[in-house]
Length: 406
Image (cartoon, rainbow, N blue to C red):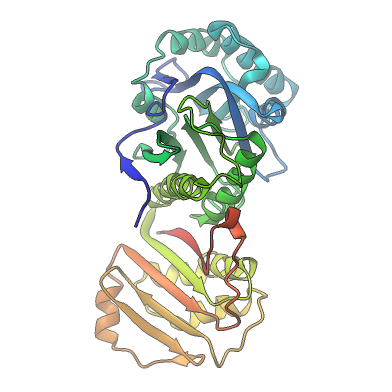
């Protein structure tokens, strides 16, 4: 049973946040600039792309977030400001400066993000005037427009909010995200921005974001490409007036569960909106020796081109799944492994003791018509089940979500 309430909200649902999404002219017609601002300086945490070809906004934001405090996030879509050299870096710095001037805050308290075409310099005259326009448009009801303005090849907005009671105070977490193509574990072409009015200790917030990202955004794959611009950034402004959350807080698990849900929801929405995706596949690995081993097996299955083509062709080729587990590098006994395939109505055991089960081809053919499918792998290598993983939440499995391309 969830300890929180999910509702149709966004980044302006928590107290003390405003946002805007405006058209400034980088794109021909669609909104292309988002601004998110807290009424007060907020605790902040971020995780960024692992790609060594790292865009200028990522470099600037990494530096600014080191203090653990920010007050605004400025995002443009349509141009990634990546592979643009020193000019691109100086442009990213200028964006933080212009944003800070418009909001009367310090440039070091601004995170900057860009997404879109790589290798093209930003049209700074348009960007500068656009920042001023976005600042004037800030509103406590601007979250939906902000969610729209960060999109590129996405076909749907991705937003959510939840409420949880901490210290008898209503604490809200909201989020928006973008991502459709170039999606693969270790941060993909995606941006995600989370706001909360919770009071929370900065070091714990960074730990929580890193752990949560490893189990959500870094566990999705669409096409195997890791982008230059990815980031997840969270602001916590403390305006809910709860006691500061830390690992020792008696109700911290309620917050962790709600925080994880928001990020998992956004990660799944990214996968479901994958470019060319025809099916949404979720892999669950149970009874592994460790989280790392389960994660490795799950990633191996959903990174396999042969597995992908089998599902696209609606072919229940369990051998391809077993093969991808076999070359994952994880030690297991083939004669003990079990694999199940199904959807929300039915699960079929397709491998038992390392061999096919002789399942009904007719039932499998019907099952594979589903747009959402689940693979469950029982490694039977251990049941240590990783208490302590993820800030003292207990997990005995790991999930990875992938969308298969045509």
